[in-house]
Length: 265
Image (cartoon, rainbow, N blue to C red; front, side, top):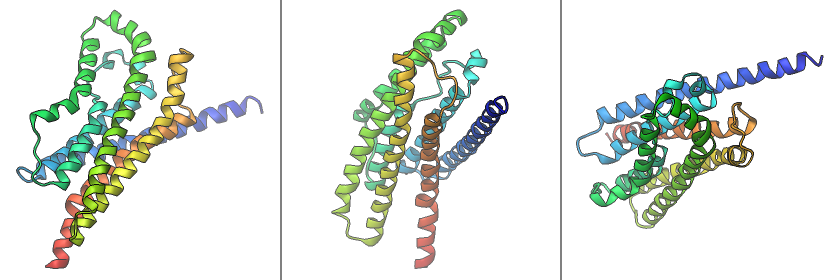
């Protein structure tokens, strides 16, 4: 009996992890297809839709990167390490700018908006710097500096910047709720408010993982090579962020406007 219980636990864990990564793969595919559809079908000059598409692509890359890290693919395939595909620090600013563009159709990006993406530029520069290192040096950096310091810091900044920009987006939404009088305009603002609040909450669920991961890496110097209940929960929250935003994209930009035109026609 003592031999079968560990084996049963291992089998159950394998099934849960496989199912979780399978769901993540489906959601990532759905998010990418949604983003591409948004880009190709968006009207000329419709900045909000393009920003939403970019946000979906950024989330897809972030979740894909985290899935490869948690599943150990990076450990087995050294050539994929430090490939600069994840720009998680740009997710918060893009959501914020999307909300502004959705609330104010006359909003346009300007040079002053570049400041929002400076952390993401630093993140991209760090990955590029690590990526071009010789193979032996990359292995040392991966097992030491990146695994124990850079990645935990990257995740912490992702959550903090995401919360900050979602908070300011929420402030814009709350302000418009007091100034919109037409029912359709108010309904649009209410939907944006709900989505911002859900994203904020799900990002908080993902932050639970940071406590466990940061303690392991920074204090215990023990890299997390297996998924725990905490990491399952937090990774699921990250996937849920993408799933919600992808569904919201279709509903807000296509389904609800189409129903409104049908009902008024």
